[in-house]
Length: 246
View 1: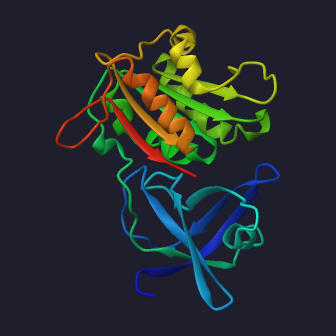
View 2: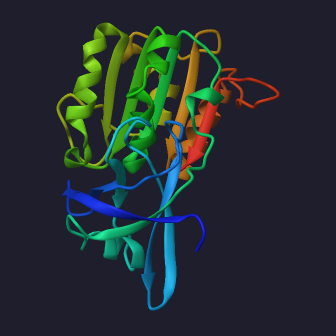
């Protein structure tokens, strides 16, 4: 099929029983940080494909895709069997509008993610643009258990920006030292998140990017709208940029 390229697997990294990173070399077209590609395999003579965001920055190789295995999912069950030197198909051209180019300027950039939706935020933060455009950046990652707080070496590298960067983990199903409990929307509504970071989450100071499961995206957006924030649109710039990731 037109548009598909054959990629060579460089590494399959297993983070937990269900979380993996697949690293691939492929001559894809230039893309913007935050965009997604598609991975594909042939199953019983039919192509099975799913979208996965780049974790790597546009100028970084190999390509890096972060995924969770899906029960009865024919694609992910194949991906976890791959070894270096195997092949997997990827699209030549990336897609998606969850990019910093779609976000207005502000003082503080808040980036909210659940699970594997951490990926596009890491891709963006590996570029120069967010550090050039925002004075402070807060990356919030919500997971169920502490072992799901992955890519810590990558996140630690952002600490080279000093006080300009904060990482706030949420762990919902067990006590975890250094992590906040519960859900992101509740922590915003109660003011806990602002007290924890010492930074404003208000229309006059903040831009917010929200990527994750649809419930979190919806509930977080509603709490922020209650604070006077609006959905960001090209013709009507606002404060909230979202992408469902499921």
